[in-house]
Length: 327
Image (cartoon, rainbow, N blue to C red; front, top):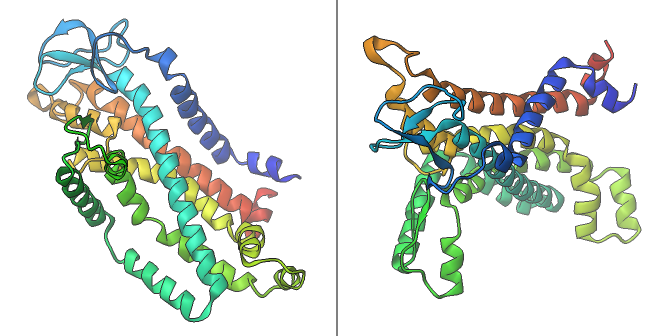
C-alpha cells in the first residue's frame, strides 16, 4: 500500500481535506461569492441592503447569514460578506505567520545543532528565554514599541481594523516600519522556539551519521550540509507543527482582536460587533443566533480542519504509526 493511499484510508484525514478545501475554495472565490458593492463600511465590511435599524436583521434573500448593526450606527452589516472575506484574510495571515515562524525556527535549530558545543548552548539558552516569555506580553510590547516608532516619525497610527492615514514619513525606513503588522511580527518573534527545539534535537542525533560524514568527505560546504542533508531529514516534526499552527495562529489572531489587542481579524471584529446580541430579550440565547453562530462555526471548523490534518500527517510521517494505517 503506497503512502498516499495509506494516508487517505483514514476518514479523519478525508474530513480534514474536505474542511480545508471548503475554506480554500471560499477564499479563492470570495469576489464571486461576495462581490464588493459601491457602498462599503470599511475593508471586509459591507452594508446589507437599505435597512437602517439598531436591531439585527434575520437571514433573508440576498443576505443569507443576516445582518447586524455596525458599531453604534443604524447601518446593517452583511455577515455573510465578512465571513467570506474573513476566510481569505485568515488564510493569508495563518499561512504567512506559520511559514515565517517555521522557517526561522528550523534554521536556528539546525544551525545550533550543526555547530554544537558552546555555540549550541548559547543558541538554546536564548531559545529558552523566548519560551519563558508569554506571547500575549510580547504582542503588547511589540505594539507599544511600534506605536512609539511611528508616532516619533510622524507616520501612521495602527488600529485593530484599518490603517488610518496620517502624515507619512518620506524616509524609506519609516515607510517600511509603517507597513509592518505589529501583531504578525509579535507572533513570529514569540512562536519560533518550538520549531528550533524540535529541529535541534533531531540534528544533534543525525549530524554524525554516515551519510553526513560522507558529504563532508566529498567536500560539501557547511550550508550545503545544513540545507541539503540535515534540514530535509529533520523537518518532519516541523511540518506537522506547521500544519497545526495555521489554525492555532488564526484562532489567536481572532482572540487578540476580540479582547482589543489588535490582530486585524475580520472574524474577531465581527464577534466584537455581535457580542452584545448573544443574549436576546428575556435571556433567549437564540433570538439573534445569526449574529454569532456562523462566525463561531467558521472559526471552530477552521482550527479543527488544520488540527485534523496535522494529526493525519503525524501518523503518516511517524514510522511507528505506519502499521496502524494498515490495520
